[in-house]
Length: 498
Image 1 (cartoon, one colour):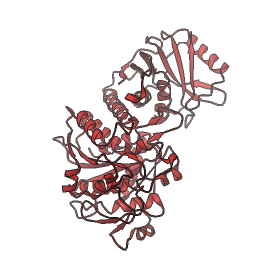
Image 2 (cartoon, one colour):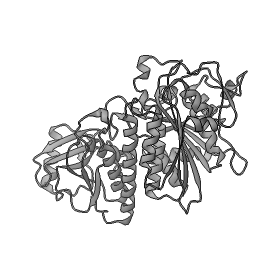
Image 3 (tube, rainbow, N blue to C red):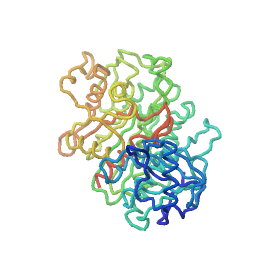
Image 4 (cartoon, one colour):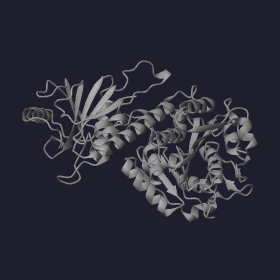
């Protein structure tokens, strides 16, 4: 993990392999963002070089320059943050994160990098720290082989270095950076190495000394607990399903939040088998569970005074000789029955078990997160996630929290006319139907129970099928393969309950 420190020295004074500066987009060319603190000779040299190179300061524009006068670093990197919203206004936090992360992502292998925060406030320094750590990631799996590795050490240069609020913000940035790297590593594991049993073992090992308690149900425990969704989805695989429960319970907690994460370690589609191209990235179908586990560890690291119960719903969906069939009727946790009509709609089956289990403790709210539907990708593309909720206040809160975190989510409605399509003639519910995102939302809502007040527990479903995995080129602080999307929103939701 990259080490992060802060300093109130100027960017010119800090020694290291590289100095990162943020630029903004103007009509003519790139311009250095305020707060750089560099001397006139240095600024003149940089402005001339940027003009010669026709730099524009656009997002993801990274310019590397050597032999820059007046700075101690051997390499100066100017990274674009795009246009400022209003003339004279500060850069938005996500623009800073993305610009800085784009630079540190491209500086792998260096020992020491200094990043000048574009501005003088704690908020700008905090966004710089988050972006720097999110970008400083390199795949660390056995299958990856030798690689350059991430930047070893990053110093954020800011006048706010001694501010106590910045110390708190840096602690948060480090926790989020570690959590994101952990989730990315899990998603990037080869599916022959990461399956339900090994996923559960890795989480249990990670929990040691964290203050998070972990319990694991294997096939026998799932059978005893009547977790029909897990047992049905995992029936076609030689590697049995698991249900992992994480519990964080600080002494001063007054609210209880439940997280439920989809953890299909590989999704072949089962007997409703996917085409070849559809299976290529299906090792990422456990990204929801990875996000949940990582968020819980970050929450514990930050010592947030909120009780968290999290369920990782793990299975491998394969077309083995014992695989479930369309037409089967399954009894789920809690007793509801489901008629199967698409074995490739397996995620909602394990999530339903998890939601029913989470509801039994009557928490204050429930959040599930999953790479659930291709329909969400068709509607919103690969960078924006869908979500829906049974509670108007929670819906608005999730959107606000996600926007502040820099994770784009778009709300979908639970349209009343879709609900009748879930009716089955032979069971309580039909597994799959039209209008994929909304149908899946209604299906999951059926397994959310009532709270202590007798009303449905406030619940939100986050469908991260698009942004959880990046099989195109890297951008901003987002690497190829696992992205860790959703973690910052989950942590933000927990923070909102303190």
